[in-house]
Length: 53
Ligand SMILES: [Zn+2]
Image (cartoon, rainbow, N blue to C red; front, side, top):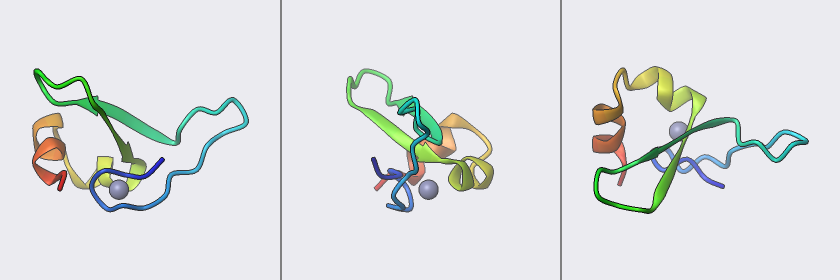
C-alpha cells in the first residue's frame, strides 16, 4: 500500500489495518490510501483529492 499523494509506503498494523486513511473520488470506485502526514498537510478531503497525482 502506498500513499496516493507522496508515494510513501504505508505501514500496516498486525491487524493489517493501514496507517492512514482511505478516500474515494466521487463517482469512482477505486479507493486511494493517504498517509497520516498527508492528512495533516491537506485540511479537507477535496484538497487531498486534488493532491493525488
Ligand atoms: Zn502521503
